[in-house]
Length: 78
Image 1 (cartoon, rainbow, N blue to C red):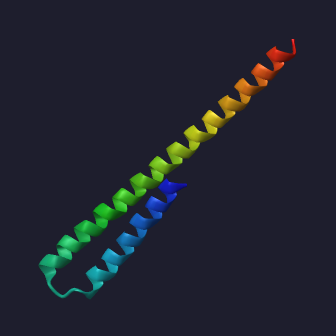
Image 2: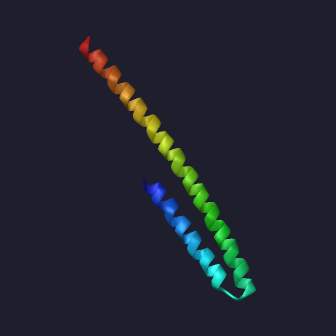
């Protein structure tokens, strides 16, 4: 859940950077700002992908825990 929040924060930062790019008049800073916006967007995509992988791992861990719990209960009854 936290990783999704981080991804949303990075996306918000990207939006703010892009708005800042639109408000500047210096072409040199515009280029830097565009590069920064691109890097922020890439970071947001990587964060989102990482969050997806973490969520999938958590689901696998939960399924394994349920399977182990079921096996343990089954062995205790015998």
